[in-house]
Image (cartoon, rainbow, N blue to C red; front, top):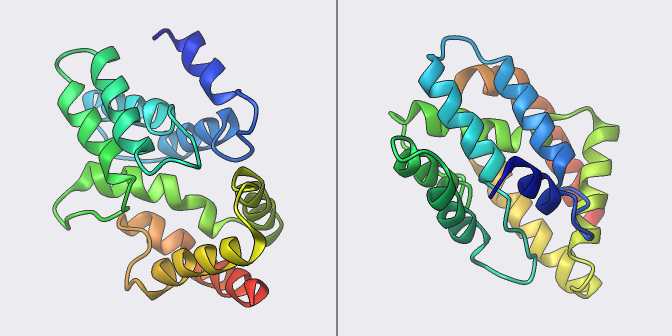
Length: 181
């Protein structure tokens, strides 16, 4: 897959949050991360580009399918690590010693710590991506996911992201959970 094909995947109809703007936001967040080697930055950049390339809200295997596509398309020397990182985005669980995993997951979740208006736009876009789900079912499912994140001791496994985003993320999550009823 070429970069143009990746861009086309992210600009497909129905992608209201998991789209090219999300990738650009993630790449911008990566650019602000200090202390990475050139190789680490390349691995994280590839993981960002590929992590949501397959996105069908009716399927439970998007991360695995995205990881497999990445492994078929990135350089052989980074293939395993890029695939491993993408697979972490299924649960957003990261081992304490996994620095690159912590950075990728923190970048992917950074929208949770956005300014309230931006967070609300994200939440509305997610609802539209799941428009096929009945309202009551969506509200219950979304609230369950948000409560899961809110209950975590650490939402952002990278310490710098946690310091920047944790308080606002918890406020956003609480506000959306309350609105979901």
